[in-house]
Amino acid sequence: LSEGRRIIANMERVSSLFLAKTTYAAVLVIVTALVGWRYPFLPRQFTVVSSLTIGIPAFVLALAPSNQRYREGFLGRVLSLCVPAGLMAGTVTLSTYLWLTLTHAPRAQVTTATTLVLITCGLWLLTLTARPLTSWRLGLVALMGMIAVLGVIAPPVRAFFLLAWPTPGVWWVIALMAGLAVGGIELVHLVRRRIVGDRG
Image 1 (cartoon, rainbow, N blue to C red):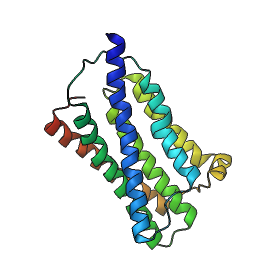
Image 2 (cartoon, one colour; image 1 turned 180 degrees about the vertical axis):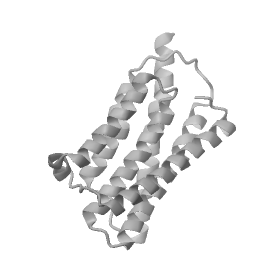
Image 3 (cartoon, one colour; image 1 turned 135 degrees about the horizontal axis):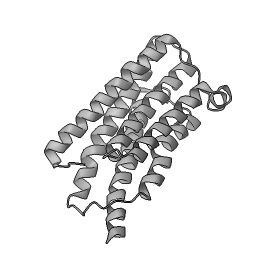
Image 4 (cartoon, one colour; image 1 turned 60 degrees about the vertical axis):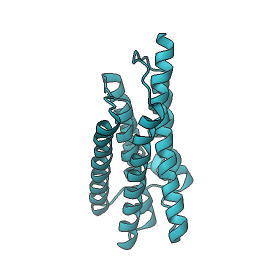
């Protein structure tokens, strides 16, 4: 019984992460293809985003203990979070790309900013799916965030992933857009709790 509860509860957490990624990846691909923009990331940069916000955390969360009882409405709860949150993440990321492109920022600055903003979106979504935030879950989110910052600080890692140290102006853009993303995703979560009745 305990094993069954763990599998079902953790499947819901992990599904939300993967489906949110599917949503924002679709938004990025469709919009850039229709408008004719360059894709905001290089493949290796998107790999960093996926690894830190989905791959590693999903592996840990899938193995975590859980005594949560089975609740009906699995699909509704998952879609009501991942679709609007994914749309929010994709929209904010594209807005960051457009802002910096219109201000003629160097390509490396643009891809670095969009990468960091999307990582922030993914990590905040991770905090929603991992709630209640026990010490080890909070530590998991903090560790993924520190690795992301290290990827920008450490010159060898930064060079491998073709990132750049953001200029002060770009840092302000990242902070503003990441703040909007966090607020928007949290709002999605609050509205979802009222509509779906999910108290997780």
